[in-house]
Length: 123
Image (cartoon, rainbow, N blue to C red; front, side):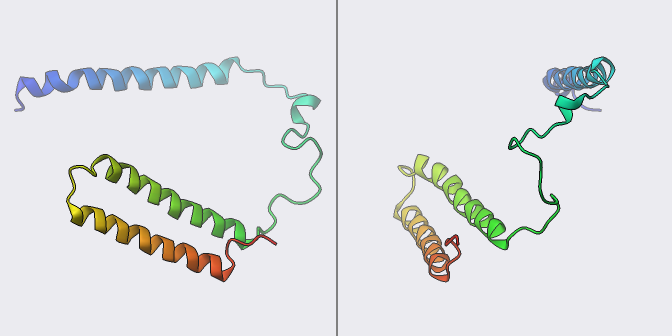
């Protein structure tokens, strides 16, 4: 049997989760029951760019879109590693500093490689 302190510590979190789950079910049900169901012409018209589509939306994309996206994710993760490192820089020794410099150097070499290969050129 678990001690009673276990129950008292997590009771508030369980109540919060129950209330959040209840409200989410309530809001979804209210939206389903109260929303208008009859679409009209203005609602079904083109809204993204202002004119009707002229091609199939399921056509193939150029691979450069995916390549740029992957490069963005890699360099975005680099920044995600830099924030905690910068906050803890005073507590780190020189080993921590130089290990981050090595990490940044490897990323810069990768960036230069991608640049030289033409991955960032848009024709």
